[in-house]
Image 1 (tube, protein in one colour):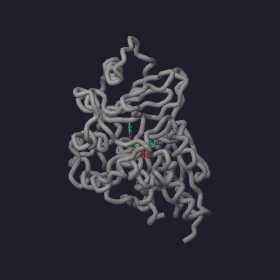
Image 2 (cartoon, rainbow, N blue to C red; image 1 turned 120 degrees about the vertical axis):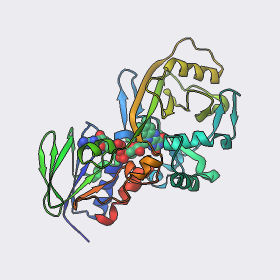
Image 3 (cartoon, rainbow, N blue to C red; image 1 turned 90 degrees about the vertical axis):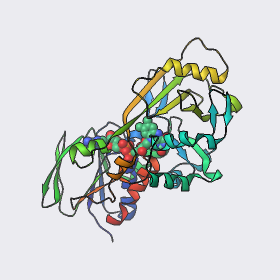
Image 4 (cartoon, rainbow, N blue to C red; image 1 turned 180 degrees about the horizontal axis):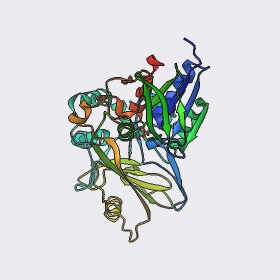
Amino acid sequence: MENNRTYHIIGAGIAGLFAAKLIKEKHPLSTVLIYEAAEKIGGRCGSFFDSEHNCMYDNATHVILNCNRQTKKLINSLLFKHTLCFWDFKKKTFISKLCCIKEIILAIFNTAKPNFSALLYVIRHLLHPYQLKAYFSTGDLSNLLCDPLLIYANDIKYGYVWQGVEINQNRITKLRFNKETITIDVGDMVISAIDSYHYNKIVGGYDFDYNAITNIFYRTSMALTFPQNKKMFGLKNALSQWIFSTPNYTAVTISNSPEKIDSRSIWQEICCIRNYNSAFEPYTRIQYFPYATIRQDKKNNAKRPTDAQTAYNNLLICGDWTMKNRPCCIETAIQSALRLLKYL
Ligand SMILES: Cc1cc2nc3c(=O)[nH]c(=O)nc-3n(C[C@H](O)[C@H](O)[C@H](O)COP(=O)(O)OP(=O)(O)OC[C@H]3O[C@@H](n4cnc5c(N)ncnc54)[C@H](O)[C@@H]3O)c2cc1C
């Protein structure tokens, strides 16, 4: 049914931006306002320009799998040309994927011990040879995924940090931001698309444990070549877990990582795989994300919500953490926005 409500979306990560698209497609006459704490959109899957390295980086290199159907619809499917493959650092050779199930699980769940239903979900989607094709981001996530969704917002307010709510009879009446307080009219909707860490601080009820991810960028003047000319591969028996080679840089990702990673040792691993001695480590940028994803084990998964509805009549939630049993990834964030549809 057509409506001319105002939808207040908080958070301009992929879940919030995709929610804006769904609302505008369903209700073209509605008003969609987005409030974002940062000065840019994209959240965990945006890109940024590093002026020191003179290079576009993604907020961590992202792998998108061929089975991520909704994400694939947003980006060019021709990009999915890499196959998941693994290099054994000790044996100095590529090895069968079947020997690397542990590594695949760690990459998808950012924990070595996900709960069983989550595992089944991924196995169902992944265990087809065709599905093992993947794309990895090359400084283009904002451009490919996020920026095209901006057209669906009537306005986006940057630097608006959501800090609290006022409630009357199970309804949010006011949203308190650092810059102003917004009154929510009767009939209008609020959609939280922020991460669980901040949601728990503001609204409460979701006190998760988190796992970190470290991403290291080595800025090089040309693409580094690796065995069999692979551009993307996982590693076994090494400190590095995934290596990605692009024309401007080589990136390394380490899931569930400790805070301190020695970029020099990782660089030496890269040199060793290439069988090439390089005395100098190139310009390096290390990104450590302490709250990269909720720890997707049995205990934390049990705490995840089962639906987009909340205790407040006019508040819905979306975001990767809101979908029980699903890995915290771009695809899940988009799916969580799709789950809003029946309430919009
Ligand atoms: C290092 C790293 C590597 C990853 N690798 C992969 C990968 O390879 N493949 C994959 O699919 N996924 C990967 N992910 C996960 C993926 O990035 C996330 O699942 C996805 O981006 C989540 O989107 P979201 O919209 O739910 O949340 P977010 O991207 O976190 O968006 C939330 C938005 O809300 C804003 N916000 C927060 N608090 C407030 C507030 N108080 N007021 C206003 N705004 C607020 C934030 O600034 C942010 O823009 C990775 C994540 C990290 C951190």
